[in-house]
Length: 482
Ligand code: TRP
Ligand code: ZN
Image (cartoon, rainbow, N blue to C red):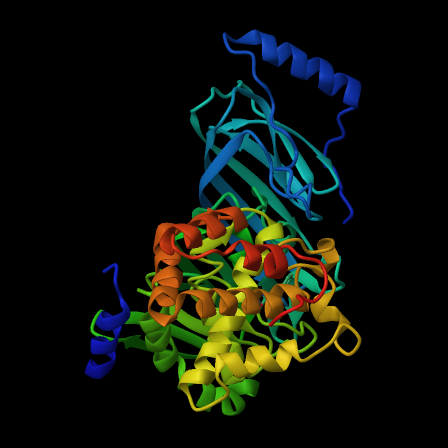
């Protein structure tokens, strides 16, 4: 353990179907909006129903910025799979607002209040439009509470995968990349608006609810238990998770700073995951050595029995695996804690900043653990032609060819190849400075591809990166030279 810390100090330089409860005819709503807008001193206008994401235009909303989500959920898997929720968002208006949207898909809304006063609302597709009793002033902090319930519907991705609140054999698993969070709580469902979270989940006694951050309470009243979880660091909505079911829990700490570890494993996966999960502390320490200080106040993993899900997800603090993971997948999802969760894309176009880094982490792990070097992995990929691995060269990593392709091979493998080209150009010392410095520069924030290329150019001003950007990052087809 102590030798690991010497290593750390060496490389660490910087130390659906919408259902309205109340149907407001649109003409009346427009009239009401106009009246409200004129009633006070400020003339608010409605916030726009999306943040112009190039791949998911309806995701997120304009006019406000959420600072905190307080979610109180109750779920009974034995009943009709009914979810009951109260979500209180603390947000700041970024314009004078007469109305604003939240993203919520499916479920019934019983009541919306803004600053404690009942607010009108309307639903259309994934947009829940809220019209507060009084306009909100630009810069004003306000609280909006939504009471809702129903049986959550899965969200099907453009690529066919399912997310949202997904029933499992003994409970449910909530996964949100890219847009599934709106299937279980209302919010500003876009990675550009990160916030802290408190998530309380009430389940039948005997089951557990595991979420992000730290467990702050477990209280049984009658035949139900409430688990409360606190996420202090900013989190994108797609990284929020809840896992309900039977889990074996193990708690420990890592290193001299005693980073808390909370691992929840479905009993059916316990045997198959034991050896890989035992590597978690070693993986975190190896990643700290390579990527810099771990960016959050706790870590761990959730291993469920949800094979239909078919993918793992880097949910914050505690990545989710749909069955026992292998070492490479654990390395990948934990690497996302730095690249994706702490440094989060500004839009879904910047997905390669997540997946290229997490994939390159797997290459580096292999290189450092008697496997192929990153150069060998790069060469083996480059050997594939446009005929035998067309997917790899089908679009440039920085410009996925549509929403259905943001998790295709160019984003993962060719994204990692971009990082390897940078490493070849600058050498190991500067390369590790770059990936560590990048994680520090945008810690707990958002960044896009232009931020990254500018960062790299500044870190190595004597090198010419233009050919790498042109051919590897933005160029169509297979680059002519490895
Ligand atoms: N981000 C996940 C990973 O790399 C994969 C994934 C899950 C994903 N769901 C997705 C990627 C939806 C894009 C879209 O482990
Ligand atoms: Zn990934």
